[in-house]
Image (tube, rainbow, N blue to C red):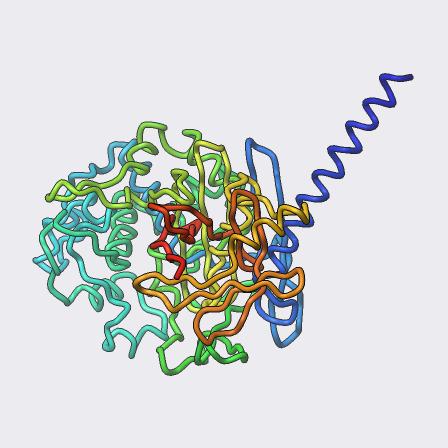
Length: 455
């Protein structure tokens, strides 16, 4: 009986802990979004356990349908990870080599492109230009075109540099890789991915958009100006030629998927189920330039520390949609977020959730005495060589921060002589350095920044 009561107490405490964490994630989602605007969906998993899944905002401003966690979103350049994996799949079938020149598969391509290897293109070190800023392409990309016509149109510019001389992100390059996949496999790009990835992994709601602007119940939105409140459909933005048929995005960014399907993909890719672990390691290895410098990109994956922890990721943006998919191997943590507004990057929201899960930021202070002690140390004026004067003030029992004449903002006292603004896990830490008091900004994405010295 005693054992049963003790077990019940433990279960109750665990349930309360899970609920408390869920409420924290809900609060983060609400901080970064509005119920009445286009929004976001998000999913976190750690050690094969679902930690959180949530949705907020409007899927369609005409019908005011709410976003759901199982909605299909366009994932943009996260597609590039799929394209890179497909190249490795064909390598494992002896259909190609990373050292093969692209001209082997597309013989009538611009002569200046023919010698560029698949490896160069995968790592964005080929020297290829991009086509997104080409006004001649903008005039025609609103309508469907075959992959041959797309390639003919976007490959007219000269190369920008020699291979492995510099990192230069190129959507053009990944469109060429899509054509390579078609030639090597004998199947259309969309059919090949369906056959080797989507069907075997039961990714039933994932597919390549071969034409058109939208699919499903989720509409993509943008703004004429970031400062505006009103959202419009992406294709209505004339100033940026934002009506783009997905045939022009193709293997560089035209996949649509769901959170659950991306979960299947993430776990399969990193475990050796999609391609061999040896080849996944190649994808996840930084590329070395001729200078000896290593860039933060491998073969279809970004490789960089986030909040000092190594991560593998890719973000994506197509007209109307923003996405981010990230894996922290050391913690066996996967996190994915989609937004149906291309002016709302889900990254800051997702990083805040990751910080909560991995306890990357100091906890908010609850003890009133500790808050008072921190306030006494913090109050004052601070400045760095590149910032306005930061004034920390105490009004009643509340701390405020104000840069120059900007709006005064409430701040959250935290452990470890730290504080943060509301709605963020980025924080500032109070330190003593050479007899001077300073505040060091610590950002989850960019790390420590220049200190502000007390005046």
